[in-house]
Length: 160
Image (cartoon, rainbow, N blue to C red; front, side, top):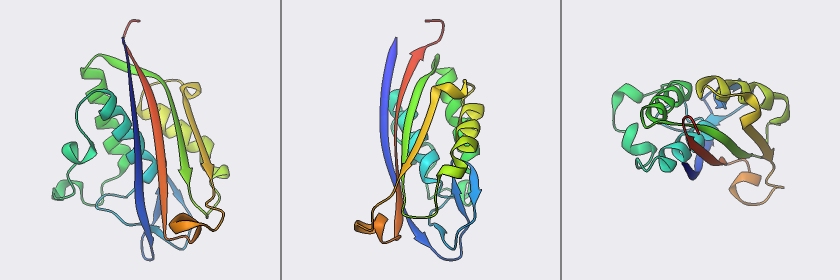
């Protein structure tokens, strides 16, 4: 009846790229490096759902060697992930996630991120939690070399 999945995603911060987190374009002097838009939060969420379904990982479904995913919005990938979940007969019970970054501040953007995720996963915003923490100048996060996101999801069989 219930399935749980968890994931972590890491991307390097680089100049010359836009920064997308949770489907929100955030004004910053660096963006995340990746084949797609490198939305670290959505990648962790997507992979946690795929894992809960027992369907492998994000690379199996959206390989970085496939040109069709070059520069693609992770919001499109999240919608595809919802379709996988729906096909398997599951829905979101709740999702909890965290973004780890030194800068920029995530607090002003979290509500919109929650709205984006809830919209694509066809659930109530109350089922989606997103929070953020700083690296306190420690490690690659604290030095602003990269960002990390983690997600845990509990899926329930539809109709339960």
